[in-house]
Image (cartoon, rainbow, N blue to C red; front, side, top):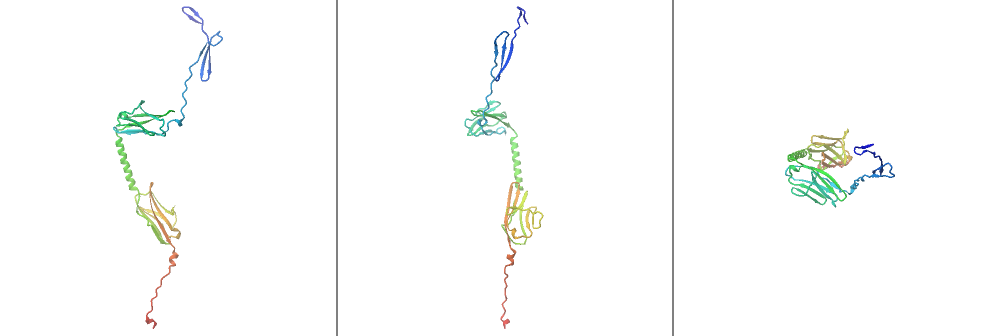
Length: 291
């Protein structure tokens, strides 16, 4: 029982609160005693639904994104975005959430499917994280790119150039070249010794010999030996047979670099030599012998 200091006691107000759910909304009904119906209905506002995301295949298709840059003060910095189809595509650039316009040292333009943002004569104040939005009528894609202004960037580039030159010079020193090649053709008699030999300069990482395109291995045999002694590389067949005749090649590698020297070897049959008719010369008798 509630009381009122001025007018005495007042009747306590009683009601029944009923909550019901309709779809995605909760409805509160307030029913008072003695009332045959519902006196008050509280209906909350309908919740707002976010629109469904646009299908990804309808959004702008970015083929190439801009890359972070590290430049020295006074140099230019240029960012590029490449899209597959520029129809109905717009690109906006932002710095600290502020839209950038093409003015002063900032240049913004597009050419075909490429969209550019260039900062001329960079200053320390240009160092920032830049955002971009690529949008069409369906939706947008966003990203960011970092621009650093580095006083030491030139020194780093010079040091890298020096190191690159040193590596190239080292590679030139190590890259093998032939000082002595195989002869174009070797012709020997069956059963004799065959020596194929090349001389190189540099430091090859691999020396290989091939016969008719097949890689040779000396293994543990007495009839063929493959060896290298400093810069001299040899293939020796101690006693040749007719089947040894064919195309031989020496391949010298250094990393991905490769040089080769080749020769045709002809084996003459021993029988052919043995069957060569001998020439006999008779000395004519003097007249005195017939006397």
